[in-house]
Amino acid sequence: MSDHVEQLLDRLLEEHPPATTPHEVFWGAQYDLGLAWVWHPDGFGGLGLPRRVQGLIDRRLLDGGASVENRHINLLGIGMGAGVLAAHGSDAQRRRWLRPMFTTEEMWCQMFSEPGAGSDLAGLATQAVRDGDEWVVNGQKVWTTLAHVAKWGMLVARTDPDAVKHEGLTYFIVDMESPGVDVRPLYQITGEAEFNEVFFTDVRLPDSNRIDAVGAGWRVSLTTLMNERVAIGGNAVPRGSGRIAQAIEVWGRSGLEDPVLRDELLRLWADVEAFRLTSIRANEMTAAGTPGPEGSTGKWAWATHNKAIASFILDVMGLEGTLYPDGYSMSRPPAFEGRSPQHGFLRTRANSIEGGTSEIMLNILGERVLGLPGEPRVDKDLPWKEVPRG
Ligand SMILES: Cc1cc2nc3c(=O)[nH]c(=O)nc-3n(C[C@H](O)[C@H](O)[C@H](O)COP(=O)(O)OP(=O)(O)OC[C@H]3O[C@@H](n4cnc5c(N)ncnc54)[C@H](O)[C@@H]3O)c2cc1C
Image (cartoon, rainbow, N blue to C red; front, side, top):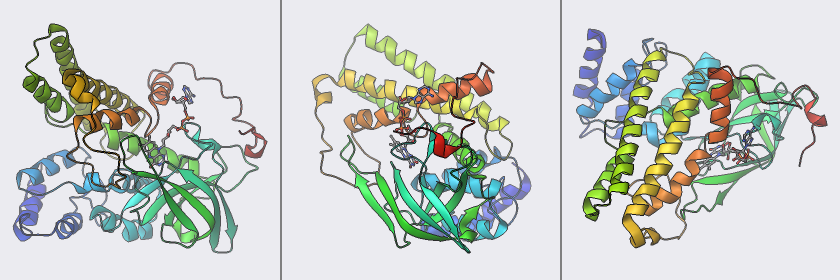
């Protein structure tokens, strides 16, 4: 880390002592000094430095007693929306949205999936029709995480039904408080409703909320998804921490001496450690800009390990693992912390679905990283309105 960055960090920690400074104020000052997304240009929360420097900055902030929880609280904004604005937004859009996103004063959500379009996202049907300087949106999204607390939503909508499905899409940022936006909770296996259905009825958006060109929605969506996979699966946590630490703790407490389970624990530990080192290497290779398809490797491995470790923990717990201390009365996150291993088991089932399923991650890996032949795509040259839909 350069002397200049060290000095900025010293200044941030001195002028805003983490113990006595409200989080939002600290994060605002961090943004203003260019220490939020260090690879962004000056004036937009960055210093134009390589992306990997951010890891060093965050470690130093944690050591100084600061919180980096905003990256978790506003994951969809900071982990994905910021990358979209950096790659495709105008300066005016970056100026309007980046700072309150980083401070968590304005939460973000992602409105991509629909009842008829998940893995096949480009088949989506929510429509936006131009009306002068505005767009009028009608349709429905589903599985929209944190829509109930979001101020802004990333929306991809169909603007040209006559074009082939990947070309008729446009990307917008929606004010979730607009008239005609209806957010309804979906109750999950864990007893929570962290995601929602979102209905749009004649929702009016200013054209200034459009990201990139009309018809460029697929390209912008890919940027979002690449950032999402890295935000979900690309975080290298310290060795032996996180879910594997919980597995070791539960194993130690159990007093079991079963050699098969012990072998299984060691295998999981080795897998997680190999993944951790691979993530560090991948992060160092991503100098700046939008992450590539390699992010899918991390997302796939993260989901696979999380599910295996959570299952192992329940195996060690035996009958106790069949109880559910968290209860099923509906709660509405963002508070995800401090839950039981049983909650962890149920929640990790979603890891291989959210942010793109594991099958789709393996398809991307096969086609775009290993260069294997693509799967047949029979509808890609048809106008969207002629593609049969269920
Ligand atoms: C906890 C959670 C949070 C989520 N949050 C959001 C959010 O905030 N915003 C948002 O827009 N979406 C969100 N999603 C939705 C998620 O992105 C979709 O569920 C996911 O992309 C899969 O789409 P689908 O559910 O329609 O399943 P489908 O696409 O119908 O897939 C069904 C099955 O078929 C398999 N399959 C499909 N196509 C292929 C193929 N070509 N090759 C091999 N197998 C295939 C899939 O892997 C899967 O097993 C969330 C989902 C979960 C579980």
